[in-house]
Length: 386
Ligand SMILES: NC(=O)c1ccc[n+]([C@@H]2O[C@H](COP(=O)([O-])OP(=O)(O)OC[C@H]3O[C@@H](n4cnc5c(N)ncnc54)[C@H](O)[C@@H]3O)[C@@H](O)[C@H]2O)c1
Picture 1 (tube, rainbow, N blue to C red):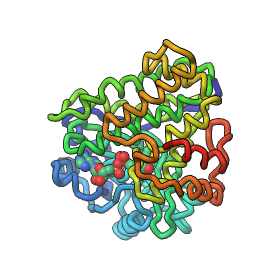
Picture 2 (picture 1 turned 45 degrees about the vertical axis):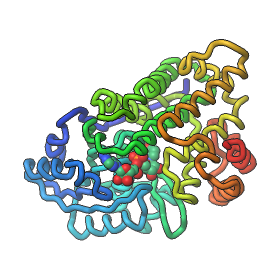
Picture 3 (picture 1 turned 120 degrees about the vertical axis):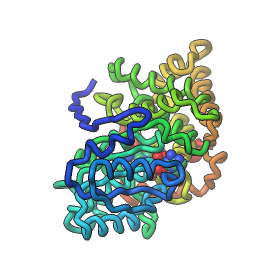
């Protein structure tokens, strides 16, 4: 196991009815930017619950709506201008990963001196950020309990990430009932996103870290177990609660401490989203089969462990077990409505060359836990991901 320092200061407030508490954790006298997306929170009553809670706490707030999926720099900068003009000093993000990520960027950009795009493009060091709280409405990204944010820029067709402890939420409210209005597509996306987050931190090389391995396997096996109930209607509270907790645990840093991490599926997936507008989770399910095909030998030991412990595959040759584990994982993605592989996801063959060129031009290579994925391997991954 490698050395690590783990510090996660996010206060999680979990369970039914907890949105009513949201005002308690915002400093008294704060001027709040209440930011959200396209209006689903008005239809499902969460907007009213938040307004109520802020009012009860006597807080002044200004609303900003319209943060889109794969939040855009152009939109986020409008919120930055609003917050600067109105002297807002606390941000409340209410929505899914896009709103949370967008608000992390806004939080960093408000006090930033210089070109705010440098925050993502140059990973500029942040001296400070406006404090942020979250009401999560879509379990998927783990953004509610981590330091990362991914922002897209329409003008340049880029989708880039940054991370800083300065933008970790002060608190996140997770009410499983807020997921009841999610369409099946977003539930399936959430399950797959959380599953692949774990795979990025687990399906690498053995690192003598049995606790991290078993924590990762627990999240994976739980997602497999609960998926049918999560997708069922009417909504099952316990299944939604378990999904929320799994998605948070998948990417709050805990399972990845002291072990190698991959993230190549994500980096290639971000390019597919930037090029073709494909949902984040769908980009991951499209790319992942290619990563395991090309990286099979490097990942052999962990693929066998994954086959045995997550899918119960202990019979047959090593290669048969690995093939079956990959087939079961693909079938699992499909079972929640997320197409596996590039063909099913509608990604054109030209993507292999395009993505490889984009990543290499930007200096985004090599990828993978051992830095073995260069331009040729990116092409091979997308060609093998069919
Ligand atoms: N910060 C991280 O660690 C991290 C990790 C993975 C992905 N991401 C990024 O997060 C973004 C994706 O976030 P996401 O998957 O949470 O989806 P999202 O936030 O983009 O939301 C998807 C859609 O669901 C709608 N929605 C959200 N909550 C709803 C509800 N309760 N009822 C009905 N509709 C609702 C939204 O309005 C939107 O149309 C991508 O940009 C991705 O790159 C970030």
